[in-house]
Length: 486
Image (cartoon, rainbow, N blue to C red; front, top):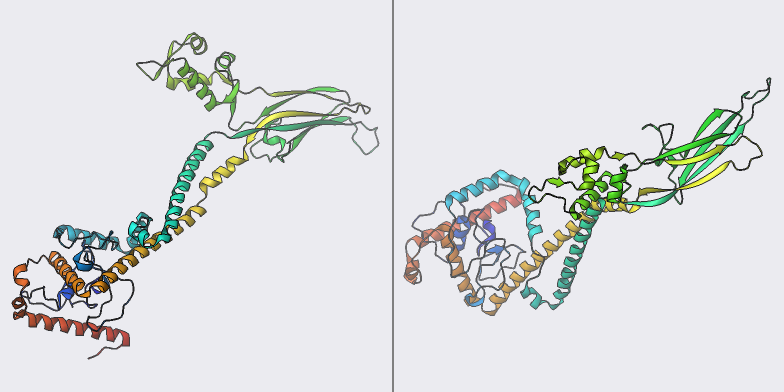
C-alpha cells in the first residue's frame, strides 16, 4: 500500500524513529510520511491507482503510482465518481477519522478471514459492479452508445427468460400428459392332441396371446396395465403376455385390463361425481374441483374460515351438517374407488377353419408429455449459467479498466493544461489528506509562511527521509542480486 501512494515510490522505513517535533507539512517529505502513516486497511480514499509505470521526469522523484487525489486542474474536483474502491473526499471538506477501536476491530476481522475470503470478496465485488458506462465516458466516446443499446436489450432478454422460467416451474408442478392410442392385439392358437406313441403332446391345448403398443411409439403394453398375472416390481417390461390352458372346445373369455395411471386416478362416488362433474381423476384434481364447488356456492363459514357449511347435497354425501376443511381428505377417502377396468370379451376358437382368431382394440391412454423432460432439463442445466457468469465477470473487469483509464486521462489532461497550478493544488490536497489520516492539527497561517520551513527540525527530517530512501534502494538491490551487502 505504501508503494502506491504519494509522489515517491519508496516508503519511509517504519523502523526508523522520527522526531515528534517534525512538522509533516514539508513538501520534500510529506508524501513519504503519508505513506508510512497510512494503515494497510485504512478506510480513507487511496491517492493512487497502479496501472503501469511511467517515465520519470527529471524534475520529479520516481513514482510507481498514478496519483488520483480529489484535485483536478486549477484545484477543481475531477468530474464523475471515483473508481479507486473507497469513498471520495472533496479537497475542501475534511473527513471524520474512524474510531481507533473500530479500526482495530476491522483489522482483526480481516486478518481472521485470511486469504480464503479474499477471492470470494473480490468476486462478489465484481458481481456488484455496475455495467453501465458513465455519461462522461459516453460523451468522450460516442461509439459506446452501441454497448448501451446492447445492455438495454440484455435487460429485456433477462426479464423475458426469468418470466419464462417461472412459468415453466409452475407448469412442471402439474401433471403434463397427452392422450395416445394404445392398440391391443388379441390372438389365440390351438394345438390338437396326438395319438399315443407319437413324440408330441397327447392333450389338446390352446394358447391366448395379448399384445399391445402405442401407435407411433415403441412403448409396450405392460407399461400401462396391471394384467391378471399381477406384475411384480421386479418384472421387466414386456410387449404382452400369453396364457396356455388344456382344452379342445371354444372358450368365452373376458379380459379385464387395469390401467396403471401415474399419478394414480380414482373414480368418485356417483353422487359426488354428478355434483362436481368429475368421474375419474387424480386426488389433487378432485380436491381442486371440490374447493371450486365450495367457493362458487359460498359454503365456507364467514366467521370461522376453517369450517365448511354443508348444503343438502353435501349432507347426503358426507353425512354431517358442518365439517372442517382439514377433515375433507379423510371423508373423501371413503368415496374414492379404483377406476373401472377395460372389459374385452373374446372367444377362443379351436376350429381350424375359423379365420377370426385375431382381434384389435384401440384404447385411449395418458402418457407423459415429452416436453416435460425438456423443461426439467432446462431448469436443471447450469452450463449456460456458468458461461454467462464468466462473461459478466469479464464485462465488469472491462468496465472497471475503462473507468480507471478515464481517470488517468483526466489526470494527465489536467496536468498538461497547467502543470504548475495542478501540482500546487494537488500538494494542497495531499497535505489535507495527510492531516486527516495522522490526526495532525496544523496552523495554516504559520504553514503558509517561508520562515516556518526554516526551523531546525527540517534538516533532521530531510536527513531521515534520505536515509530511508537509501535503505529502500539497498534492500531492492540485495533482492535483485540475491546477495547481502555489508
